[in-house]
Image: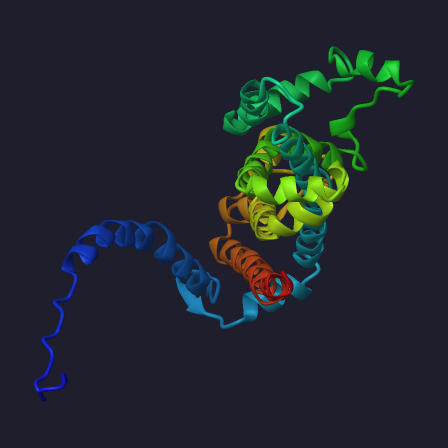
Length: 312
């Protein structure tokens, strides 16, 4: 109420906002929310002899985690996913940050060309990338042997050995997608005000000190975003392994990820029929792992950023 004791007129509900948001909400619900909820529902059921769905509670999860027919493949896929993720975190993201730092400096010329060349592989088809790298790394007609001979490294069937197949696939993925963290870091670096950098240089700071003390703390939010995007993307990885090593994740499941494990289980391979309920259970495990990682990021990295902002 106002000073005269009269009630203030209520603002009309902004119906135009609903009109603009409704299409996106409907599409997202139909193609994202509903499939996710239905998959989680399906993981709580099993099929009887007649093919009908019977409620099984968490029985499928217990079976997946403890049954000797399922648990070795699950734990092997999780281990491979962790290795796949760590290689991206330790190789791809630091490399992207280094490239972004170089492209944001005044030393490098032709920055637009370099940005385009580095980012171009990210828009290539997984099938094309897999085919090209299979040719390059072929021990028979590939060109990798001549290149490695310069460094006195013996050429091997890198994609055919259990110990090297997954690291090599991870490095291929790093080569393809290093442009994404590079562009995110570059956008953060060029948004830093020049006055801060000039003030640091006037105070006698060298290039490394400017980067370490000024630039890096200011792009910490982007570092966290790149890290969580890498985590989510790598635990959803499937295309590259499928195009290079097939759904069987050869050799001897050495390149098996949760995505390929889910595909084999849900759709079946060769003469083995698909098992939708167990496939949905694997998808539920993937969802739980990704959700846990996102929550850890929200409650740890965000707090760290808040403390850093207070210190600054």
